[in-house]
Image (tube, rainbow, N blue to C red; front, side):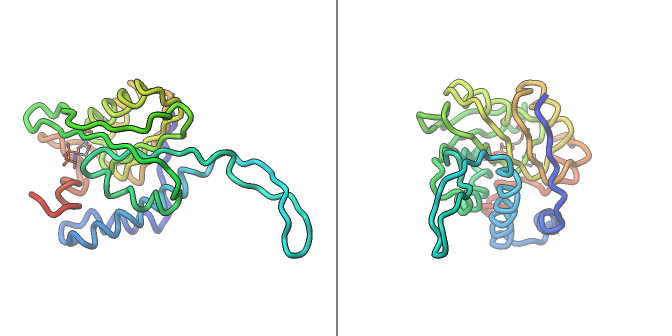
Length: 209
Ligand code: PRP
Ligand code: URA
């Protein structure tokens, strides 16, 4: 079974609370999404492999650590995942970026695909899927399906708020991937929105309704 990591760092928790508040305006919500993704990305990359190389400081030769391959791909699920891209790219500027377009059918809540453009060498990369919300888990499961079909083997799912239903669905469908979240919420309402959640993440990020 994949692991679920809940990031309880005070800075992350503080920023998520601001994002939850209905009165937080679009610009602030967007800024917070970038800040939180940077903090979460920092934690989620903690186990990337290092290798030792020899370098020369102004004082002497020494051995020091560098990343053993910087082959990372980040894949936001459109739309709301876009809010996490800038923060992740600040951490890993050389990452390749793929996009998966999915929206939930308003009646059935089943994800509908409308776009998919992914790097061709996913099998050689550590892949971070970005989406602030894991509700029923339908979108996340579909996104991982696409990404696995393209050969990816090391996949991590980074999200802000998850419902227990979404965590269960994703872990059962894809037990090999790790899930990183900032908060596990209580439940889903009758429209499959996370409770208490933060509302519609795409609308909050882009100012639509
Ligand atoms: C939101 C969110 C996830 C999905 C989660 O996107 O960004 O992708 O819902 O719900 P699920 O776990 O039940 O699948 P939405 O479908 O609202 O599309 P949008 O980002 O274009 O608004
Ligand atoms: N998608 C969202 O944007 N918010 C939720 O609460 C559930 C799905």
